[in-house]
Image (cartoon, rainbow, N blue to C red):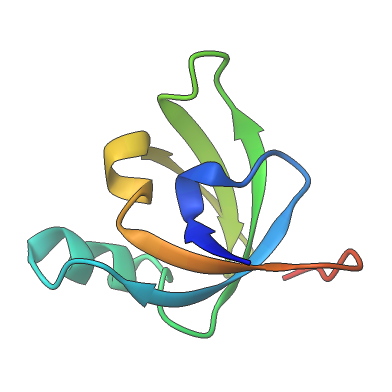
Length: 82
């Protein structure tokens, strides 16, 4: 299933398909490792779901919901780890 990164929950793993924006934020996200083909997992999510932390390139990075909506991912089944 293809969905925005903000919709995966802690413990779920996904593969980045594309970034929905080509602006400055997209460039910054790519610098942090959020690039097409990267495997990412959600490790923490605030109760209000406005901030979540993701494991990408062996680093945990927190993103606001408005920024994680720009990242389109495909859910990975079977517990694939980044």
